[in-house]
Amino acid sequence: MTTFGVSLTLALVFAALAVSARFIRTLHGLGFTFAVLAVGSGAMAYPPVFIAWGGFELKHAISPLVQLILLGMGMTLTVDDFRRVAKMPRAIVIGFVLQFTVMPLAGFLFASLFGLTGAVATGLILIGSVPGGTSSNVITLLARGNVPLSVTMTACSTLLSPVMTPLAMKLLAGTYVPIDGWAMMQSILTMVIAPLVVGLIIKRYLPQLATRCARGLPVVAMFGICMVIGITVAASREQLLTMGVALFGAAACHNATGYLLGYWVARAAGLNRTDARTVALEVGIQNGGMATGLAFGVLKSSAAALGSAVFGPWSAITSSVLASWWARRTERDQ
Image 1: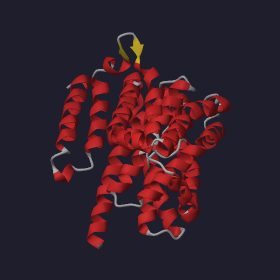
Image 2: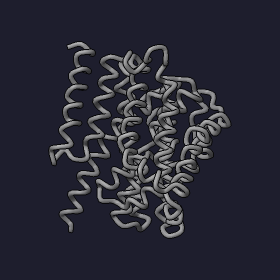
Image 3: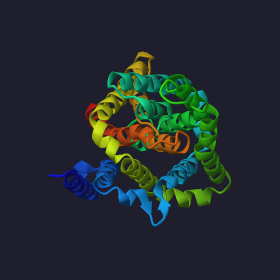
C-alpha cells in the first residue's frame, strides 16, 4: 500500500476512534489523542489541505492559534493560582528546574545520539526548551493528580519562558544554527505572554465573560493544537518520510526522560505520589504550539518544527496512557 493509502486509512481509523471515545467508557480521555493522530495522518496523506486555503498560507495562522490558546488559558487563571507558589514552593521549584534543565539538555543529548543535525536537531532542542503544555492540566485531571499544582506550574513556566527559552536555545542549539535570542524573546512576549496577560485581565475584571468563554475553550484549544500539528506535518512531510524513524526515536526517549526524571526526582525530594505524578506530566508534556510558532516565526524553518510535529502527538499518546494507568492505580489504592 502507498504512503497515501496507509496515511488515509490511519486518519479514518483514528477519526472513528475519536468519535467513539465520547460513547465508549474504556476510551474516555483518549478522544483528544485520537483527534491529534487523525489530523497528523490526514496531513501525511494529503498535505495541500494543511498548506494553504485559497491564497492564504496556513503557516501564518500558527501564531494566532497559539495566541488564542494562551488567551483561553489566561481566562481560566486567578490570582490564587499564583499565590500557590508560596504555599507549595518546593514542588513548583522542582518542576521549574527540571523543565528548563532536563528537557533542553535531553533534547540536545538525544539529537546527538540519534544523529540528528542542523535545523532538525535544533527543533528537538526547541521543544525541550519551551514551557509545559496547557494540555498537561487536563491530563493531570484524568490521572487524578494535583490539578492546582499543574495549573500553577504551567502558568509560572510560561511567564518565565521569555528568558529561559532563548537562554537554553542560545546555549544548546547555537552550535547547529544561529539563534537570535532577542528576536525569540520578543516573539514569546507577543505570541505567549501578551494573550496570557489579556486573559488574566478579562478573568479579573470581566468574570462573567470569562466564564461564558471558558465553556467553549477546551474545544477551541483542541482545534488549535490539532491545526498546528496538521500544518507542521504537512509542511515537513518529505523530511518526516526520510528521517522520521530517527526523529521519532529521539522524541520518544526525550518524552520518556521527562516523565521518569520528573517523577523520581520529585519523589526523591520528598513529594508525595500525587504531586510527583503531576510534576512528571508537567515536565514530560511540552508546549508544542509555542515551539512550532518559534520555528516558523523566528527560525524561519519548517525543519525546526519537526521536533514538535513528532513530540506533540507522541506525548499525547503516552500521557493519555500514563494518566489512565495512574488513575486506575489510585482507584485500586483507595
